[in-house]
Length: 284
Image (cartoon, rainbow, N blue to C red; front, side, top):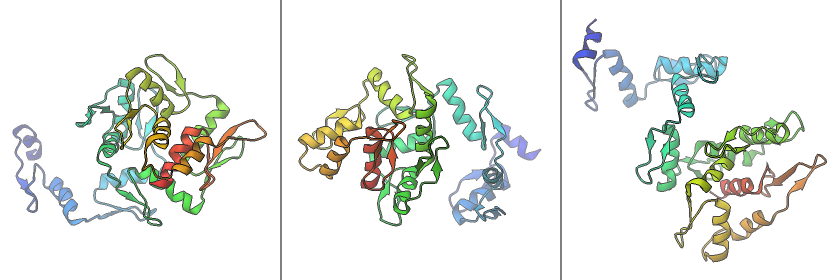
């Protein structure tokens, strides 16, 4: 009862001695104190991972059980976490509450905004322990690590091709199914890849996110920036390799399915633009 009354009065009698932050409940203070001590008393019995809060352990355990109790009422998709469902709902409403203060772009999720901000700051917090290369996104580090071990755990059931990460497999499968799940809201045109949709949308918005550091010129598509730099920029690194990427011819198998092979790790990419982006992951 006392805790409930504080929701009306705003009283927060429990104070953190380390940082001075105040809380309405003693239990909430104890959870907060673990951010200072690093204590993680709740352990997953299946994999041994430890977390600071019991609720986080329950959410983690769902990654083992496959349980997804949070369902979207619009499309029926289910999620492990309530927070992930809330972010997903914004894809239906079109809401983008998170604004970049530097350029004014809006994003659906906090994580998307954080990744975007790194394009301004140049921050690359994720480091490869094997070669020391750094990345702005954790997912790109995971992809890069597989280039060291040659791992390709994701196989296409239809043609047998193997891929280093699930996203490449999903994109590849659409070459068989013809699925184009990404739709332009302005024209209704559909695309197989989210990246291709983003490039198309720039024809409407005029956005040019790729900047030449030497001349300051902006481009809608990264491949256009690469071609510009190869032609005009005196200090453009790895020029010969990028020229190879632009001039490389696709492979054609017996099913007439075109792919582009990375000459470093032999990963198969579905388009020349994806090959260029993939090569950049090696060079970062």
